[in-house]
Amino acid sequence: MKKLLHWALGKYTTQTASRWSVLAIDLITLVIAFAITDLFRLRYGHISDWTPLFVKLAAFIAIATLFYIIVGTHRGIIRHSGLHDVYKILISNIAAAGVLILFNIVNVNHIIVTERFAPAYSEILTTFAMQAIAMLTVRLMLQRIYNEYVMEPRPTENIMLYGAGAAAEIVMNALAHDKKTNYKVLAVVDDDKKKKDTAFQGVHVYSHNSVMNAEFISKNHIETLIIAIANLRTDHKQAISNKALELGLKVKAVPHIDNWINNDFSVNQLQDIKIEDLLGRESIKTDNINIVREVVDKVVLVTGAAGSIGSEICRQLIQYKPSKIIMLDQAESPMYDLQFELKNNEPYRNEVDRMEFVITNIKDKLRMEQVFSTFKPQIVYHAAAYKHVPFMEENVYEALFVNVFGTRNVADLAIKYGAQKFVMISTDKAVNPTNVMGATKRMAEIYIQSRSTDTTHFVTTRFGNVLGSNGSVIPLFKKQLASGGPLTVTHKDIIRYFMTIPEACNLVLEAGAMGQGGDIFVFDMGKPVKIYDLAKRMIQLSGLKDIQIKEIGLRPGEKLYEELLATKENTINTHHPKIMRAEVRKYPLEDIDRQYNELWEMMATLDDMKLVGKMKSIVPEFKSNNSIYCQLDKKDE
Image 1 (cartoon, helix red, strand yellow):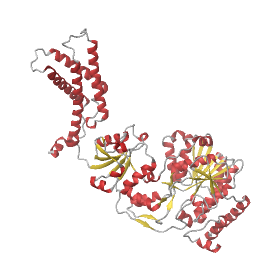
Image 2: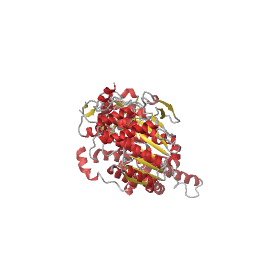
Image 3: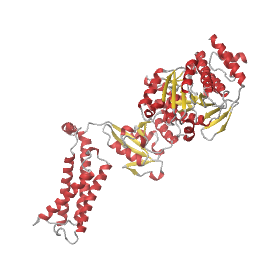
Image 4: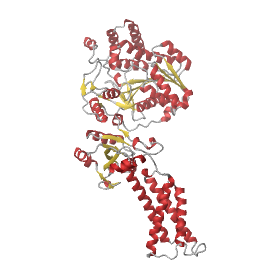
């Protein structure tokens, strides 16, 4: 029978009733409500004079029609009726009843019409109460008929909702009206003990422990958990998500209200939990006043501007209104993408006159001199560097040329052309380095730390991995998942620190603003993350089955864990709880210049062993790991 009705009514699946037909149905129910009311009031079947009834009915229809049109009860699509439509129905009927009651009050001495033609208070209240119920009933019936017999059959998905508040109410309403999937909310979870064992929108409310277990999930065939709490702490959200993933559930969350489309919420706006959500921390608040004071109306140069860190620094800098921001990188395609983004997207495109895009390599001293002489930057954010450990282990010459001598070019030009501040982006791999890349970054730190003058202040910021950056393990895992696996980890016990790109860049700007020259700032990176556990979480988030994790062994130069401080370094607090100033060993300026000049002359040999040997003499704590350069350390022992 159901299939037959669906076939017969199928042509109406995309059609909607006209607003005037909806209004006509509402007026018909009003006539019925009026008739039923008067039948009960009069209590007899024979009426000698029908005129007063018709006059009162005409008044009811006229007043009701007026308010139905004003409020717009007929404008909504019946099959999508919701709380907003209920509100309209109640308001319009209360208003119509109110006007008629007011008419009776004014007509108390029958100065307008006689008692025969004036509706009684009970007649008014009963009729419009019945009418409101009738209007709601008609909409619910038509909605049910449409969902059951007219709509194409929808796949069913069993849902568990986390939260029993205002956001959850909005989510349940959106789920009920989704046209693609028949969502069944079988359980609501809330941390408030007072809500336990109550009903929320007709669904039982459970405590966390009652439902977040394999037995309950399996018994009720629950497939998805939706987190519907507006201001949930990050660590709590992560704990809920991790538990749900362990139980094999898909996890979705309601975005912040600022991200709702036209301030309205639909099922399509539910966001899948991403690995970044499981590794992120509470948003860090910085004192933007310091950054504004540092940047506003200044000429700013960002090297490595097309990279993950450099491009985010550029995005954040633009909002602080520098007079000019010069974005410099040697990578043509990524620079084109950045230029296109900033020139075409809000809020950046309004600042296009402040932007300059330069293609060059920082190791090209002649071209870099032209950039400095042309723009005379007052602040330099130096993010350009080679960062991939295995690549740099095999390309020592290029690692030194860019990371050390490219940095020297930019630093020397900053002094020559009177830059006020030079902020370098370093890495935790510069601490007790075990690879060429980390050692070159430590050498760059040593060089710029020695360069600070009364006019140019040099500052280093040091932090670990950033989520989603070009060199991060996460993009690699995503590619491996897309190809069906396996996910590869170098060692089961390897750990890394992570923070988001916006968070890292915001701290860079804040640390740069507070630095007074020769400073090395380290960031609070939170808790370390096991890469093996990260791989397991990404497999769970993907929903894919039978994806293996393969251990391939440590790569040349790689170590199990990274550090933010060397053994001879300590930190002191700053005014920002997430930024600490490192107390590091200072090197005599004459020794640095002599050693770096000797290394520069040695570059012409292209002899990796000699170059790395010289690096180890400059950075004594550089001890190679799982690398051909380990033999150089053995010679020193």
